[in-house]
Amino acid sequence: MKFLNSKYIIKFIIILLIFLSDRLTKINVLNFFENNQLEEIYVSNFLNIYLIWNKGIAFGLFNFDDSLVYNLITVIIAVVSLIILFLALRIKDYKGYFFTVIFGGAIGNFYDRITFRAVPDFIDFHINNYHWFIFNVADIFVTLGVMCLILDELLVKKKVNEKNLY
Image (cartoon, rainbow, N blue to C red; front, top):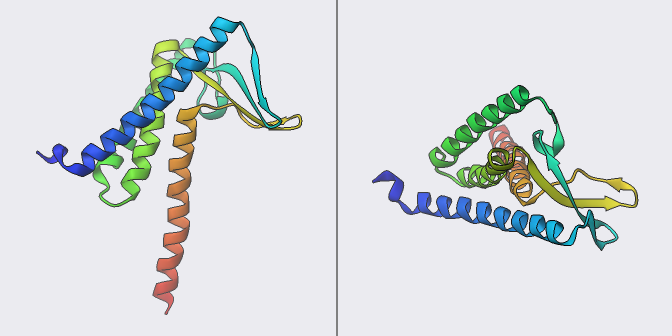
């Protein structure tokens, strides 16, 4: 069977590890905040753990209370996630692993959208009073995969174009 070859198994393990690491961090943070009745945990001069519930998409964009809009966005996210999974499984070279990492993070957040109707975000990087978007472990993997795809396009395309010039 085609889906039993080692590359598919490795990709499945990567997805599972990303999903589980995201779930475990979210469960621990949610339990900690619930049990200790805290709003924020000071970690360092540039990092706090601050729990928010994101009903939008990446970094809280398109945050709507309207159920119809929320459901529409959720369906779009599901379709895009399936496309990403298809690409992860179809692409044979290393780029397939970048899509695998993106999908692992995407299903972590998708699980929360279905289970809680919002995604818990809690990592708050800041410098003085300037705070970046609050995010979670799944967001890290989605961002990492996307950045790898972008860097690959920029660096590999540049090398191919330079090679064709000479």
